[in-house]
Image (cartoon, rainbow, N blue to C red; front, side, top):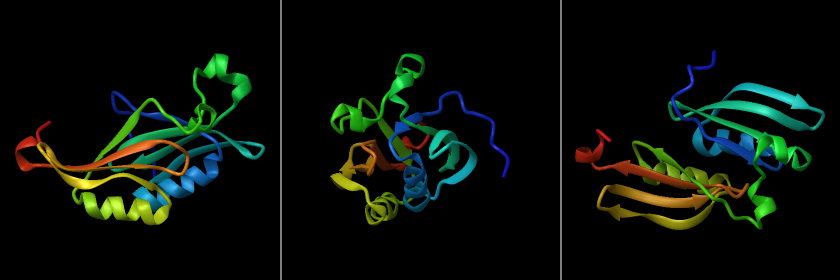
Length: 140
């Protein structure tokens, strides 16, 4: 599959163990690897197709932080500053699949004013909101 054109905004994650993260995103979210550039045992860059969009990621290279501007959640004691949001057709099914692939529950899916919404943390420290918008909110 050729890489789809990049949307106006694409998340780029920094992780430790990028190859394991890619395997997780494939299993948990049905991601498909479009590009993968290895450097020894590390991933310098990967582009994944995920839920009709693009997710990019690379292994953490702490010695390059002054040039990359980022580090993995593991270097922040497991914290992160962002949440990735997946707007899906079946929140519970996507949530359950991610949990069975190794994600941990932050907040079980529940009805909110905008739709069904749950939060989880992937095994690499990134936070994901999984949601299905109510019909009247789907034009957002």
